[in-house]
Image (tube, rainbow over all chains, first blue to last red; front, side):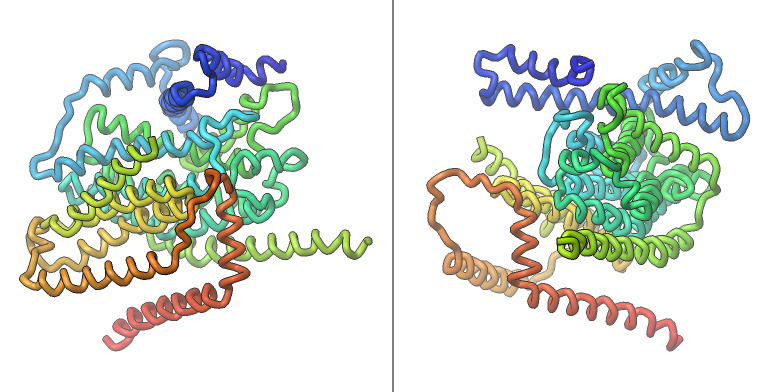
Length: 350
Length: 167
């Protein structure tokens, strides 16, 4: 059990042990490269599994079988789709802003790569352990709007540009409630480090102490990853596919990987901050608990996506500014009062 | 190692800043500005100021998108490739820039503590130090700045709304 729990730590120690001096600069660089490759593998695997899962959940919600031809119960469908995508021609539209057009999908893919690198996947298992974890995560994930706007601008297509503009309009609505909802947890733990936040949830996960913040985070998180009911950026019936309209082949595939990577990252942060991360009964290794909790959040997001109709953009702004923002500020106030009262109790007793 | 990283990102920041002022296309200027901000954020990390670096990316690089939207909406020229032309007043611009540089340089040179630490700096909790300074030592200027910004925000909303009512 203990071996299984520390499986990846043992592998990491073994790789480090290959060097004559396990703490030399070269050993550190090698470990960083290994961590980098591990995060890429996480994103690609997550995308492969999640695309199929999404279609299965969509089928389940609308009472149809979903993909069921290729392989056992259609489980190989995504692999065939990925191969088809690789064979497609890479088209750049005439009059496109070439450099911006080509760089945008790369930025979109690099963002989940940077955010997933600071998540603690198990005890002592964050690829990079940052003291600023949660703040760094928010700073990097805020840049996804820049990638969407670059794609929308560079494509030289009116629908793409409209989609990019919508991405920015949506970002200024959800970004502040998203950040404020996490502030309550930071106040409780007095730390921005994701490792310390998970360690503080040994007794109760923070969803018990911060239920309001969890709800706000999930709503704002769905808006952050541009999924229905907040998928205004790529609303098919209105703006074709928004910023992705002109993309083909692997460039479009990079966007897709980035989207699913972002979704994994947002769900992983929800699992880390509110659901206790790798903490759980010792019947399963910590990293399996972590992925179970992340999977639960992802499933919830898919369920919501295929159940609710799209919100109109002015309704979204109204909702974010007039409901989510005041509620998240109220949550900060209540948390502050709660901490103050909690600190008063021993004084009254003693 | 850190010297190499410093020069890579310092050159990137300065080159991107050069691109901001020389680009003819105003959207390119804004994107160069984002690149420049990210280069500066890396320099902050090298100075052990991680919190400022993350804030730099969140507040400045993230807000470039909003700036692009305003740049596109407020551009009156038909061709976006000629949206940010140069004018002949570069002489005045150079004088103002030099004056700003001298003032900032003087403030830094006269007010900084230049002593070299005997051991490498190992403090990790920059957030705690920063919050103690902001919310205890300098709380009055901090709140004054916050109230000033709120006034500006309310003023902007009233100005924007007033146009509609007078129609």
